[in-house]
Each structure stands twice: as structure tokens, then as C-alpha cells.
Amino acid sequence: MTEKIQELRRLASMEIAAVQDLEDLDNFRIKFLARKGFIAELFDELRSIPSEDRPSSGKALNELRLFVQTLFDQRKRQLGSGSTKRKEMLDLTLPGRARWVGSQHPLTQTLDEIKRIFFRMGFSIATGPEIEDDYHNFEALNFPPDHPARDMQDTFFISEKILLRTHTSPVQIRVMENQQPPVRVIIPGRVYRNETISSRSYCLFHQVEGLYVDKGVSFSELKGTLVTFARQFYGSDLKYRFRPSYFPFTEPSAEMDITCFLCKGRGCRVCKMTGWLEILGCGMVDPNVYKFVGYDPEQYTGYAFGMGIERITMLRYGIDDIRILFENDVRFLRQFS
Ligand code: DAH
View 1: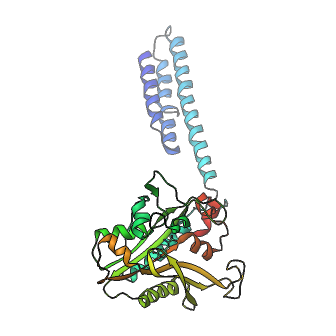
View 2: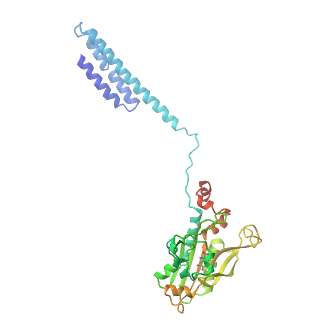
View 3: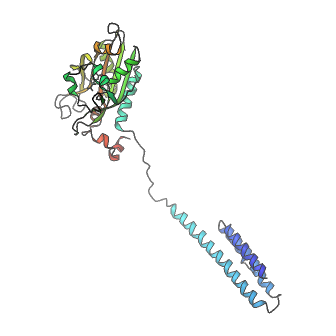
């Protein structure tokens, strides 16, 4: 009898662990606890054992029944509470959880669009180092050592001859050093200037440079390319003008203005009441520059241009503080998805 009781205890412990749902649990109850179950059978056997053993076996049997009943009750409680929990989790009246869709930084969006437009016009992309030497950033771009044009840019110097590039123009030199004409590239990248940080200027910003050198490239091609770009970027009804300007590495040089798209040329705060917005600098590559890279200025001509991406992005989206473009505040960035 004692052995049978032990055996049933083991069996019940094993089987309760295998119970997965209420149906399994009911089968367990029928097998062990019901009127014709294992435990009832043992109670029947009690009658046929010697009478002096009956009290102790009866006690052990009662304990077994209590043990199996407890296993049953516990499991029932677990299954029961599990199922109500599942029901609660499926409250269909709760509002859904919105997913956040990420977005590209407005500067990246502007840059990508500029790249796409020039790519369609046959330009490929070139890049260069942000840590530059004086030679590529100034000298080979026709800034002589004591030329006052060097003061136009406040430079972060790392050592006497090494600096953070102040514009993307040095990459023009690097491209021409490594490649014979025809050259047709745009050069996107970061540039650095040691300026007082304010709503209008930051210590770093982005530029896109352009360079096209081949036989017989003319100023009218420069204008045609830039007007095509501006029409695609700003809209086909755009008005523009080219103003004479000065850069050491181009001759002649110009700046391109477009009518202010906020006031349509009537004059407002953004265009400082002029009706015009300057969007880029450009010009024909100065023959002196060709001497530095070993191109024959008698054989080749070309044009170059450069524009600031922050300025264009700010005008486009009506952003009035450049610093917000570098702070990565999600409340700002989320508006560009
Ligand atoms: N590098 C000039 C700047 O940072 C912009 C520029 C002007 C680039 C004229 C050019 C150019 O390639 O032809 O202000």
C-alpha cells in the first residue's frame, strides 16, 4: 500500500506538470480524483488489508488525496487567471500605438535634391578631405600668401600650414591634379569657419561646389547650367540675375541672385527689402589655377560654382536660426518626414 501511494504521488506530480489547458486538467481530475479514479481505487483496497495496518494507510491515503487535490486546485487557478489576463490584453477599445517614421535631416534632403539635378546633367560626385593644407585651400586657388582675400575667411588653423578647409574649392584642385579634362563634378561637403556663432552663422556648414573643364567651355554654358539647376530646384517661373563679383580662383566671377520667393520680389525681411536672394558664387576658372594643376590654359577653359546648403535650406523652409540645423532636436526634425 505504502509503495502504491508513493507511486501515485510521483505520477500525479508528473502529470500535473504536463497539463496545458482546462481539458487536460479535467482528464487529470477524472484519472486521479473522480469516483472511479486511482485514489478511490486505493480507498477500496483499504478494506482488504490487515486491520492493524488500516489506520496508518488510511491516514497516508488521505494525505495523498489532499496532495493531489492541491495540485489540481493550483493548476486550475493558474489556467483560470491566465485566460482572464489574455482577455484583458485584447481590449479593442484602447487607442492604437502610433509608430514613428524616421525622416532625413533637412540638410540631407536639400543636398540629395541638388545632387539629383546635377547628376541628370552629367555631373559626377567628388569628395576631398576636411583637414586641408594651405596649398590646396588657398595657394593653388590663386590666393597669394599675403593676398587680402585670405582675410575674407576666418580660418581654423591646426598648424601653420594645416587647417580645416574653409570651402569645398580645394577639392577642385585635388580633382584636377588627378584627372585630365574633361572634368565635370560636383563636390558636396562640410566646411569650417571661425566665426562668432549666431542665428546667421555657425562654425561649420555645408557647400556644394561644381567644376566643369573641357575644350571650349564658355560663360554662357555656365549660365545655362545654373539657370537650369535653379529652375528645377526653385520652380520654373523663377527670375534670376548674375552680378559681377570677385573670387581669386575665377575670372570673370559672378554671383547669382533669384527673386525672393517669399515676397516675389516686392521686398521683405528675408531679402532685406531688395527683392533678390543671393544663392551662389561662380565664374570661369582663372588660368592661373590651371598652372598649379598642370592643365594647359591655352587649350582648356572651364567654369566653377559654389553654394551654401544651410542658406538654401533655411530659405526653403523658412528657418530663421542656423543653429537649429545642428542641434538634432527631434521636435524640429520630425517636421521633415
Ligand atoms: N568658395 C567660395 C566661398 O566659399 C564659393 C565659390 C565661389 C566657389 C565661386 C566657386 C566659385 O567654385 O566659382 O565663398
